[in-house]
Image (cartoon, rainbow, N blue to C red; front, side, top):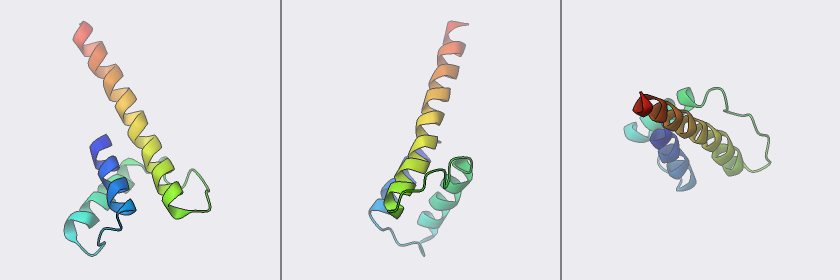
Length: 75
């Protein structure tokens, strides 16, 4: 999940062609994954909103995934 979110942030910052099917797929998946954090921040710059909103979701998914993996590894 975090990889998809990170990939979308990278594609956004590099101004990827939104007409491309791969870019559209990554954007749709990232928007769905970060639905709870999308537009959470109201920075003036669009790139800052994308990095903060999608980045927060990626960090949360990494943290939760790591916690679940550690829990499963102990048992």
